[in-house]
Amino acid sequence: MRKYTRLIIAISTVSLLTSCANLSSGNLFSHYSAQNKGVYQAVEAGRYSKAVEALPEHNIAGTILDNMERGRVYYLDQKYADSMASFQKSDQAVKKWQNQPVVSISDTATDIGSLAANDNLNEYQPADYELGFLHLYLGLNYLNKNDLTGALVEMRQANQVQMKARQDRASELKSAQKQMQSEGISPNLGSVLANYPNAGKVLGEVQNAYLFYLSALLYETSGDLNDAYVDYRRALAVMPDNQQVINGTIRVANMLGMNQDLQLLLKRYGQPKTMQKDQARVIVIEEEGEVEARQEWKLSLPLYSSSGGAIYSLSLPYYPKVEPERFSPLRLNDKKLPTDKLVNVNAMAENDLSERLPTIIIRQALRIYAKDQIRREAAAKGGEISNLILNLWNTFTEQADTRSWQTLPRNVYTASRFVKAGEQSVNVAGRDYEFNVKAGHTALVWISRQGGSAVIWHKQLGRLE
Image (cartoon, rainbow, N blue to C red; front, side):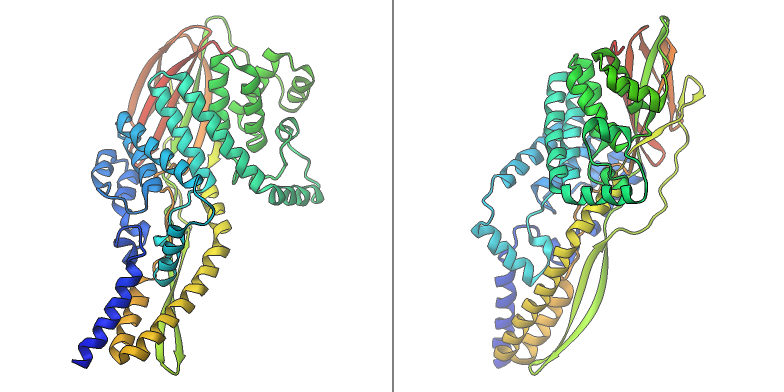
């Protein structure tokens, strides 16, 4: 009878802890990357319909992240209505999260539960780069519906996220700029024109040139040249060697009569080619691969006290070094189309994790202390059986927080070419995609490639001088 009493005490302790969890029970015993593996592998292989089938029926990471993943997977499977609905749910959940008080009773309860189990029980806090991509893909959904106004609203939202990210990391960017200057590296022209810190690759880990470039293109399409020029300069500050960004910046500076800026741009980059009367322009934005998923690193740590010994698991997330998938070159009208990198999403994800790691490590130390206190109390009341159960609880519930938006592309590239007006053909993943563009006009071709598959569509942007 006494043994059963001890067992009940231990189980009651476990029940009390799990009652704080606001996520699925799977988060107690399995980390996010393991639970999301089926979706991740299907996208990586370019099996988009299979990825849709693998989506969990219920949230495993909370409304924000789960709907980001759903929205992206539906988008790749060209289920645009479902994609839009998922991204909107995520956006609504983000707004609700952002409007919460700094500390709430529910957060405190969840926090207690996470200290006794793992950080997966905390509400997911999306990274700035993920929020930027959320608005970017909402914008692309609007663009699919030929709703330029709706797309521009999302671009403005994305730019607000970018501004906040820059402000939050102002000291880090300034420090990187000073280091570059001390090494004799002169600032890039985009940083000067946009009044951005010249922080080299550090800036590219914080600011998303994909957002800036797409935003600039859409502003230019709408005739809002001032806002277009602002975002072209921002993109140039982040990716000063991207030829399409350079061309766009020079093109709009010329249309606005920004003669002083134009002189600097032409001196730095030279005179770009101009479109002939019988020609049209094709601009390509190409996403490639899939960002790396965080993995779990575990270490067993034995602790001993007068109440007995226990082995605690330390679990930390990390990004493995994996060679990225290589893709065959794009071809436009049977000619190879060289591309320029626009953003390295992997670098943004790794930077976000490095920023979070100090907090994660501190919480690991607090959790070991909290778990050991619980174990000691249970052992004092329930003896060996309670101590054994709590040891098992400590071992199996310690899971690294590997949550992140895992279906984002790994890299994004751009390309452009003047072509003879009329019928055009882009060859990608063994497939020919054909479209028409009028003389003097510009067509945007959007591509996302994973495995041996590709999603592709185009939009007419009209006259971009």
